Length: 170
Image (cartoon, rainbow, N blue to C red; front, side, top):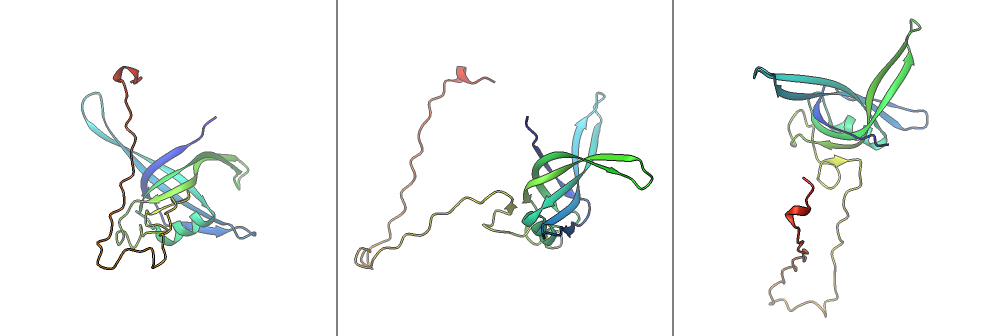
């Protein structure tokens, strides 16, 4: 089975953060997503969906630090069913999304400081950032003479793929 949800929208409130007795951060917030469509008679309509999000660990702390009400985010996670018993004894349930990956879409300086860079500057958190190769240093005896022009890095070779259009299934 596959349970994956990707949402883009604006936060409906500031992140509420709490900590478990073991010290794990849990952040809760809501997101509003919009869908624009035309009705059968040609009228433009907007449909807004409000969804609860839950962040865990370092992602929750980063969301709490950088995100505010109205911040635009892209989240990827899984749909979960939360169940509880209300104070009046009735059973309650709701669907929410447990966030695995978070990407802040606001530009730095927008929306009260939300959307600032974290980590490698890609404004995403949750999955590891691609590793960058460490700079290579050599001995002075092997380096070119100071008057020599620096060499441009070689372009990586991209293999050419021959695709027959009849093989494409769509």
